[in-house]
Length: 300
Image 1 (cartoon, rainbow, N blue to C red):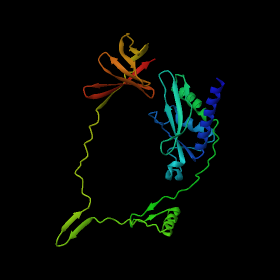
Image 2 (cartoon, one colour):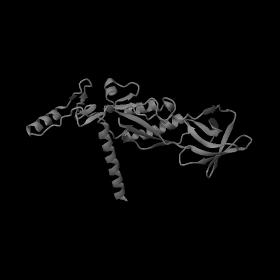
Image 3 (cartoon, helix red, strand yellow):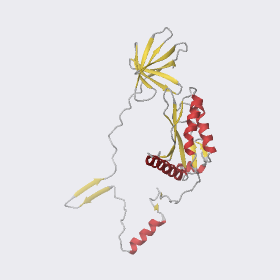
Image 4 (cartoon, rainbow, N blue to C red):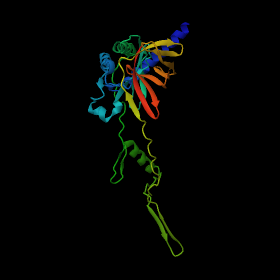
């Protein structure tokens, strides 16, 4: 038992040390004003809260719409904050990640949880719990250890400017008697004309006769305005919920799927899916060939 605890503690400390060293390689932490998990900017004050907490922990934090010039020119100087929302119907769960310019995760927090019913309060509690993973990270920007000069190409005369170590290698090859490949441009026309042979071949590029396939027509989407007086009450079932109106009458049944907050609908006249979008519940179904969306007023 004790051996297992020691191994687990070693793995956690190793991960935190690895993450700490990686974060210190970056000069900026970028916070989006709108996380992908939400429809609106700064939903439930998540962006301002994350920026404030990172700033309090000593990180150089900026919003994604206020990047300094050097970061605009070199996006790889910064890490982008992402909020992973794994919330279910009864609890709010968040994970904070830091991603580099290639989309690779450099640092990932533990999952924060809250059972508060108020969205703003729930996300505040969950995010604060997630941010505790940064408590042991001592950030000090190390800067780039090596600056690599890019190869520049002049399109006018097709001359490449190579780094010094490449030029040095070329000189060494000459000193050792190694031949360099002559990169001459191949002629566009090859022709031979003698009394015995008449030959002509054009190597100029030929326009393709392949045409782009037509894009499929977008789905027709029609939105139905919610009826505020039509309140549906959720009653728990082994397989999900049934929604009952004030009559009371069973209007539809919500069957659980493998994804949180997405349910298959078995209704009186319509079948489809119900899913959570922000703080709203959307019923999506087809009427003939038209995709319908209707907001439901569900009380759990």
